[in-house]
Length: 220
Length: 253
Image (cartoon, rainbow over the protein chains, first blue to last red):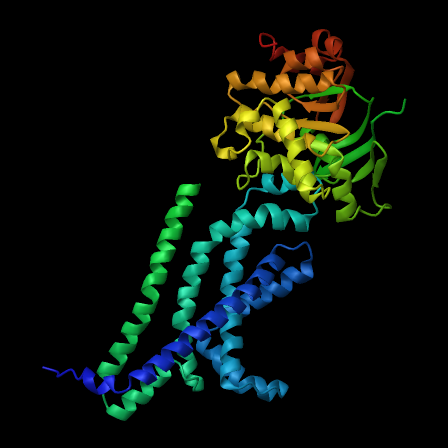
């Protein structure tokens, strides 16, 4: 029978806390930036301009269909060779995760917008609104309500995706854990604790998503 | 007096399907015109062309002071010009298309607020006046999902009127309503006609068309087959096609 020794790991609690803070901070940054990118790309997908539609399509598919780990390594190691722009690990991680998340957010946002009945836009246009105003006043307020649950779901996935940045030596929760595991030779305790931390942070968020979905079902 | 609406040589097709061929039409100020015809005859498309929800391929439309030409040589109107043109025509849809995220009052205020930049207090007073006119003063703070079909359509009429349009277009405004709710909407439309609003009505209510419309236009396959004074066209149609169509309504007027 394996003897659990969480007391050894306890000595590293500040390291875990620092890592958790980096993971949460990183998530907040990539969720905000990713949604901004996703909003632009999602609206470009339904734009009248074929150029915008094509560009956003190319972006979305490129990032959606490439493994995140490959993208992280590419932005950190390959981008400097190609462009001469050398990003530090943290900025590289933020850019990559934001663009990756944005490609998924874009699909959610596009889907939410096209799910609003065309009659809504027609009614707005018939009043004399420009298409941009119809989008802002009529379509988006209704679409956002439908987008919230899938956007939150995607954000939960993004939170877990941040663990991949440890390969770039960004000091997130997993990276700090790896240090602890190597220091203590206590891989089992360390990685179990890390898994628990991820779950504990996300649990309230999933509860919020569930509630939002229920409220949405009621309001329709 | 100049006609309020002038349409000439209007053409539209969707892919290989021609929906409107060479439509010519004039409507005098204050006149009420009923567009009738079988489904697929192009009457709804014609109505939607009149406020550019469908962009015609050829021809000319003038409503009041503003006019547009369509065709190979003329450039398509920009989104702002289109919006300005549409703000001058009120449109009432078959399925109401009220904004579900806004109260009844906000629905009616939305046009004046966001298109005309009317001050809020003024828009609110206007909206309350119009809702009183369609008999819904007691529903101002209700959301559309709590209204009956007839009430929804009356809100939709008030919403269109709030832009103070020169003409009102009705696209089968009573077709989606339960029979017992049709009367209240037709009543509002009748009042509008009596006030001298210029109206084009796509309808299957032959009794209403005969009573309220000045002129009836019968369309089939994208052309105007017959037009004339309402009573004449409905009671003594000249064309076989008109007669055949109207025979379906024999016992319903």
